[in-house]
Image (spheres, each protein chain N blue to C red):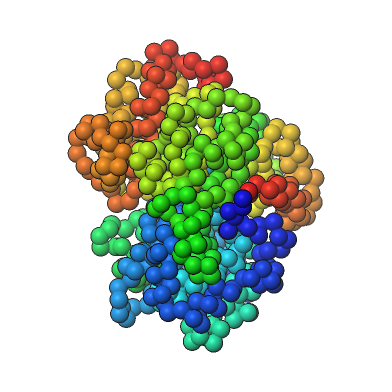
Amino acid sequence: MSTRVLTKNFDVENYADIGIYLRYGGYQALKKALKAMQPAEIQDEVRRSQLVGLGGAGFSTGTKWGFIPKGTDLPIYVVVNADEGEPGTFKDRYLMAKAPHQLIEGIIITAYAVGAHLAYIYIRGEYANEIRILEKALAEAREHGFSGKNILDSGFDLDLYVHPGAGAYVCGEETGLIESLEGKKGWPRIKPPYFPAAIGLLGCPTIVNNVETLSHVPHIIERGAEWFVGLSKSGMNGGTRLYGVSGKVEQPGLYELPAGTPLREIIYDHAGGVRGGKKLKAVVPGGLSAPMLTADEIDVTADFPSMMAAGTMAGSGGVIVMDEDTCMVDVLRVVTRFYHHESCGQCTPCREGTGWMARMVERLWRGEGVPGDLETLLDVARNMLGNSIGVMAKFAPHFWQPVLDATPCESSTICLLADAAAMPVVSCVVKFRDEFEQHIRDGKCGLVHGSE
Amino acid sequence: MSVEFSPEAKAEFDDLISRYPQRRAALLPVLHLAQREFGFISPEVEDYIAGLIQLSPTKVREVVSFYTLFRTKPRGKHLIRFCQNISCHLLGSEDLLAYLRHRLALKGDGHDQTTSDGLVTVEAVECLGACELAPVMQVDDEYVGPLTEALIDETLGWLRGVEGPASACNETLGSQHDERLEDGQTR
């Protein structure tokens, strides 16, 4: 049974060309939206479809669109988050390379639905090929009258541009992205008051949506909310999802599956299981920021609410697999180094905490850990969880309530990078504590193939 | 040394500026353009761009220094970004990066080094967004992976063997890339 929607035509030669896209029914949804639907109807359809933010937040897309203040006389902007920087995630790259017009059609419908006349695709600068593909596709769309003035004689105008980022993980956070789009360093903004729907790009109401999220929109408009809900195996999230599987699996790659496909099925039935027939040790289920699961914890469906209940996050859909030979201290060394590198430096708990964690784990990994290090490490991490620990403890008390109880204060930071850095640390140290203690005790890794 | 866009680059600059309600918003795309034109963002280039955008040079400096893709010193003819994040690390990227550095006779473990003949600059970077190709590196604009020592040797062979502009080299590497993409990784 094929459930492919977004990737259905990935194998069609030159599907990135507008002629081929049109031959396969492209831009029909846009025609339907502009000619037969009111903006409010589109918002309602998308809300009922249970489409959620697939960059990692999992928040209802239709509801998010509804946050644009009614009757505002400011210009409204749509910004596409194509900054895809969450380690383990590569789905948006495929969507832009293989089906750029699907995304563009989704953006135009979205802009019509929220009343925007200017939209930007903020794409990470490393995606040089995808930038070229999108530039070409945008020119084609303009030539065909799908963007620009009076689109398809509807009276609706939209200008749409590609905006390359320049290498900063924090710009994937929507207010950091907006700052960056304004020509500044990507320091996230404090919310409230800077909720983008109210005060976004250049102080105007702005909708920021992920590439995968918007690529779904034409299909929802064409085939309806009920069809979209029916694609899913989850009661809460509609449609399909792109799961990107990487690490120690036989067949790393991108798999489009019903939202709420069991994690075990994704790893074993689709990605071919653990490489070389080894035993599974750990899984990061939704991009690097998602708390780690042990091999015993993967019987969970990969939708947002189920993952929350399991104490982790569906996040970006990036599934990273680790086998029995993986040294978890070594893994955490790489994880903490990354967040230290990417902390923007604006908030003290994050700027200092990520550095502390990276240096401590590096020392543990070198075999220079001392008793008490793990408590200090966990203490630093707990002090960085102020934004999310309450929510995590509410949804997954079995794991996070003791963490919350041990947290001295709920200090918080402007964005979630601190939380994203701390959650992998807490989950890894608590769940694989023996390995960390062994490193401290023996001064080296106990695994045959582990780190030095 | 006076810094100035070529007429073609100036036209591109004007087009970029026209895309935004505010000049400053064009800063990142304009800095990319400047880097293509001048090779890297020197203090002189910063001043020039600041003048064009009508922004103080310190605001330009602040942006240049915040983002990793903007270079403040020259680089080799080819740029290799070598991913060291988790999926690549699990599959041996650390050893492969050491191998690449060894083959290019780069000393130490600096994160941004250029060969003495100016052919290649190697940067160790965080996730490149191509984890299905792990361990992966990006050679100029093309992804090359999953890496082995043999594939690194082969890639360096291309870089050394290809005369003329980098684009010709990209074509060769592109075939490798496309082959992987068409492997039917989507189900």
